[in-house]
Amino acid sequence: MSAVVDIPEEQHPDRVRLRFLQSGEDRAVKEARVLAGTTIFDAASWNGVAIDSTCGGHGTCKKCKVKVVAGNAPISPVDPRAFTIEELKNGWRLACRANTQEDLTVEVPPLQTRPKAALAGVGRHVILRPAVQKRYVELEEPTLDDQRSDLERLLDAMDDVEPRVPLEVVRTLGGTLRESDWKVTAVLADDLLVEVEPGDTSGSRHAIAFDLGTTTVVATLLDLETGLPKAVRSILNAQQPFGADVISRISAIMMDDDALERLQRHAHETLQQLTGEVCAEADVDPLEIYEIVVTGNQTMIQIALGIDPEPLSMAPFTVVTRRMPEATATDFGVAVHRRAPAVTFPALGAYVGPDIVAGILATGITLDRRVRLFIDVGTNSEIVLGSSARTLATAAPAGPAFEAAQIRCGMRAADGAIEGVKIVDGEVELAVIGDVAPLGLCGSGLVDAVAELVGAGMLDHSGRFILDTSQRFGKIGEENVFYLSDDVYLSQRDVRELQFAKASIATGWNLLCRDLGIEPAEIAQVLLGGSFGSYLSAASAVKIGLVPKLPLTRIVSAGNVAGEGAKIAALSVTERAAANAVLDEVEYVELSGRPDFNDLFVDQLAFPG
Ligand code: FES
Image (cartoon, rainbow, N blue to C red; front, side, top):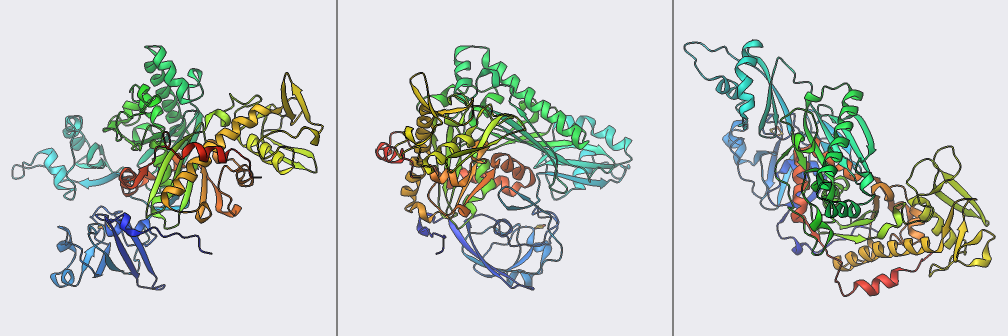
């Protein structure tokens, strides 16, 4: 049975249908539906149709020639420089300049060059098109006959761009040009002239992608020439002493006037420490980092930028802005090139923030015809369901079951944590992180333990221990517990915590299925992401009802999709635009206050087994 579900198209009248006829060896035909206004080049690259390019879609190489054979694509100002009048009449266009306004059929000639691309996210094939560009130019020295200004001389040599020029660049321009014998490299980040460097430095450009998580912060230093990561480091967020989750950090800010500043400083210190580490590991001068991309939940981003996050924590849960204004690396306390921009992601809501938008980018949910479900499992679990036809997102407050603090023997996924549990013929087998005795239970171990107890008939579907089924049951105080080892146990209350968490998440995706008009069985793929979700066993997630009952091959671990989304945005301005478009493409669904929430929640409390 096909898992592809078609959603009626009239729901998105602003989309256009493209047919790509690929000539050459395979002569394949591909169809895609994209938002009107998307360039043919972008639509093709999102859908795996390779079009020639050496400039990455910047309109300068004139290699992305395609022929529009049905429908009309307006002629761009650059087209007459690439084609004869006859060719233009016959429908030839530069794909990167051709906006789609209506349904089109496009003939794509065979590739002459191999586009540079990188694999990132969940199997995403990203055509390299970084915002950071370098142009090496050799300028004519001024003469009495040619008294153009230094800046005119430089900009004339790069006639396809009209950059914004900061005063600081002008301040040093004259000296740099003369000292370097008029041979310089201009560094651009989008339309900003970041620097003019002496000599030819065009082979070296880098960016850092950060995932500023509540618990863990990850930095990836990217070589923008190859698209490959040169160094990846992660450390604990230095804000930890203020509490494990976003609510405790916000509470600290509400109770203490200085806390916002201190938390901001800790965020900056964490990002800066990682910057030092990745630059040292990759042997890259921090001054050669010309851009940073930062994602994270909305609370982390607001705190890092010194914005009071208090309104995020109470109804009606408003963000300060859905799209952050332009920021620089300095605003995040990151000492790289001092004019390096800091790119951030938009937020759909207080709890479906920039990290989830980055996740949507990395999973490609809004680009795929198949209906897929993405769950970022955590204290606040974000759920995204949909396809290129329509996508919905929501946040389900799962409570602290997946955090160590609320589970009696809970701990982070560190050495000594039980991360996997199996019960075979009544015998318990544990997978413990590190070569040490078990010290506690982390999120994946908790889910496994409960799933295995249900499977072994030691826990009933309502979540109650069946005490006479094993010698491992005991009592601590008034509470029944199941001993996983001599010192680590699972309490009846722990089971309840997990039950509420998974019911909340399951209610979330059930409601999104309802709103999308599909049955859970029609979901083609479930992606489990985030620091908890990525480590959950698919079988256990199904057994406890955290995810829909689907063949296990359809349930995959998606890894740190927020971090992957940040990398993708650093590698491609097209993808970055796609992330920004998520605000218009994805519908946010508010669960609180829905009349159907409670009944469904009660239904979902049971363990299906
Ligand atoms: S991709 Fe280079 S001009 Fe279109």
